[in-house]
Length: 86
Image (cartoon, rainbow, N blue to C red; front, side, top):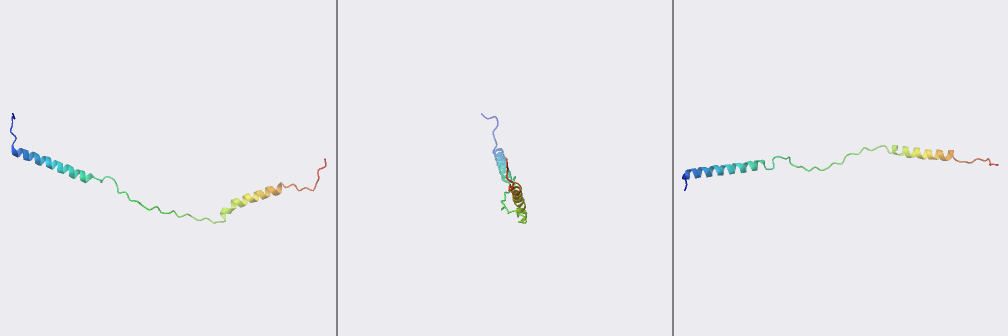
């Protein structure tokens, strides 16, 4: 039936080789597990300091607009004492 009789010593050597390759592959998998990516570290966001400006500079543009409106109102007032006689 069998051309060659398998020796017990060959079977033990084959088991040792298979067991050694399984142990080596498991050790290799354990060595690579989780080692490729950097650790994620959560940081607390810090508030950026805001530069304060002089409060007088915020009033320049509205003051100019109000001044322009007053100038237009004064220039367009029609308070002539002349009566139109037509």
